[in-house]
Length: 160
Image (tube, rainbow, N blue to C red; front, side, top):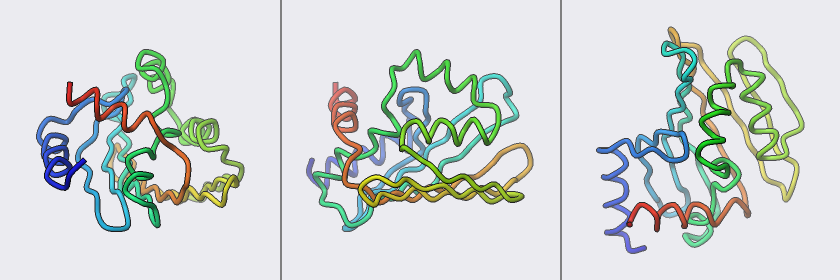
């Protein structure tokens, strides 16, 4: 994709809140050394409960790898994903979801702090949450050399 096309995608995501397999993507931007995604996940079972996944960052990757990144987060069929989101009602369940996707082992929950990391290929998934009213804000940083082709496929799907 050209820089102009990426800007178009950024605008479309920001303006349209495109639904991506159960997630709402606020926006994303591709920088020289990182890809940033701002993702909101809503709990259908509780309209007052909301998780924000902010700053999904893929660092030290080529643009090709960035576009083929995110598979472990986004890889689930749409209907299954909606069902899983309905079932995610606690931070522990949230952690289990990522454990399944990212092969996460450690889990620490201390007040509003979440820390978990993946062990394969020196990938790291580090998150922390801050309770604000009826929502959590979770920042996720990912350094990875896998995660992949579904992101490109989803971009092609969006292009139509």
